[in-house]
Image 1 (tube, rainbow, N blue to C red):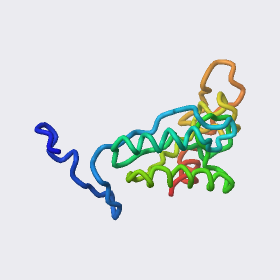
Image 2: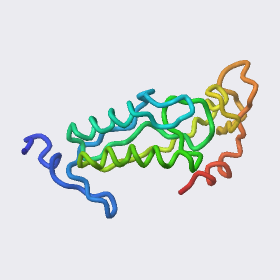
Image 3: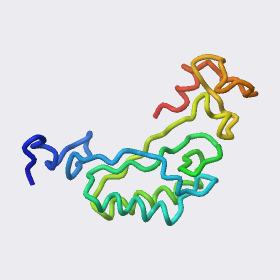
Length: 147
């Protein structure tokens, strides 16, 4: 299939050594299909398998938080989450797409969503009355999350 406006859209592409069947990307979004503890559910696996089956070459899962917090998305802060995340990635791969994951620390919103790991560019809180002020030593904190 050739699109006159986007002739390369359906051509294979590469990100590093990873080949992607086309240049269509399904961005990460909050599906809120996960368990409150951030573990993967069958509904998430089905939703992402369907997204991959729709033809995208790269399918990003829900944002995954690298810190403990209340969530209905994904958590990637404990080894116990690896099995569920692997099932999710396998479901995407089984439909011909490349799985991707966006790590998303909630920053100064962390206290609002139940995490004690609040970081930010300044000590200004997320909302008036929030008891947890952000740890604003961001450069050091962000280095912990650099892969």
